[in-house]
Amino acid sequence: MQADTLITGACLITVDAQRRIIRDGAVAIAGDTIVAVGKSADLAGIDAREVIDGSRFVLTPGFVNCHVHITETLIRGFIPGDLPFDETLGRWVIPLYKDHSPAEQIVAAKLAIAAMLRTGTTTFLEAGTIIAFDEVMAAIESTGIRARTGRWTEDRAWDPSADAEALTREALAALEADLESYPQDGRRIAAWPNLIGHMTATDELWRSVTDLAKRTGTRVSAHMSPVGGDSEWYLANTGRRAVEHLSDIGVLGPHLNLVHMVHIDAHEAELVAASGTNVTHCPDASLRSGYGVTHRGLFPEMAKAGVNLALGTDGADNHDMMRVMALMASLFRDAREDRSLFPAHEALEMGTLNGAKVLGLSDTMGALAVGMKADIVAHDMRRPEWCPLNNPVEQLISSADGRGVHSVWVDGVRVVDDYRCTLIDEDALYAEGQAAAQAVLGRSGLPLVSEWPIG
Image 1 (cartoon, rainbow, N blue to C red):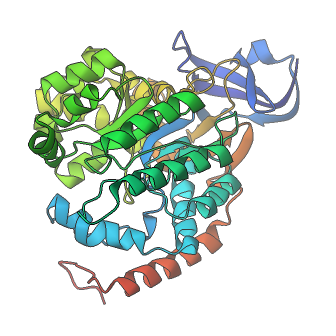
Image 2 (cartoon, rainbow, N blue to C red):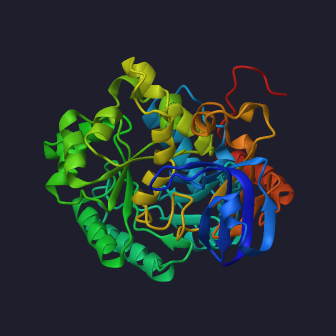
Image 3 (cartoon, helix red, strand yellow):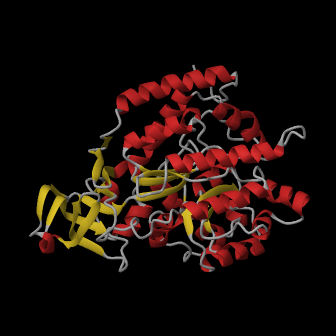
């Protein structure tokens, strides 16, 4: 057998069908695909163009971030953390977000992608909030990461004088054009007909987007019920809770990924499970935002019912999926006083295989196995959190974080090497990011709120 790259002597957390952990293991890559996995001695006969000594590494599949706002990074740390949810969105987040120029959105996106790549995320599902869509898509392509993305899409006419039918036609036409320009045909970067969600889309748009996704082989992702406001609106306007209404109009199913889902009731959880709808939980964002996830979240019940649970980082503050997996492995143990909930291996599955399933890519991503895409993360064992190495999965989730990621491959291309992105000029990006943030925040007229003086 011939290969482009052979990594030998590593500890492999394969997440394959047998969930093998292989000490002194090896992985061979040909093109964009893993062609051999096993003990180093068993792969010694492979003729590889590049042989890498992996004895200092734990190798895992690349992580899949199923909910991230990649163009929010310029406002990181600026939004006051103690405001009500509606005020945070209405006065701060959305106005700041929509005031970005295309060039500023590009810088924000690259900052988010650099943070993801350097902490082991090889694939992300964007939250459906890109505004300068074509410009940002070109920027994503240049970084080497894998992505499914969506433009900012909503159509509800809050102004009674607005042409409601025109808003729906325009929203759907934009999504159709995106899918034609960036089809899901095997390429790394593709568009999805995502929705902002909450109560911002009409039933007509929900149904049309669902049909569009099924026709094109794409899928739909949308925010839903992080706080009680979504279901309160649906109850007042439809007589049903949010997920109940989505079920009534026929848009639940395996094509759909609902994000947050903290303020749902038992019946809504049952509808999600029965329909095969996916759910992405953002534990870090839920805790910091005070959604009440520890006492309201029905994630253990959904998992028990067979719901595919994936994980996301959400907004601008954190893009490290390893931190998110660690939270998932501890949050509900404490909330329910039950140490059996979401052990380390299940949290890792949520960040790999389950995320691949959300994307409809579980046959090509999420494991170190023959035939899978060569999306690989090398964690540096020459760090105190990895020494001594006893149980690699427990230590990956409970001890390590993304700061120990030494190298990353996406589609067989080494996009991080020795803690630096290979396709992103990080030094130039950081300078551009600081200047762009100052421009965006300066135009806003909003104050920098800090309990301690910043001089």
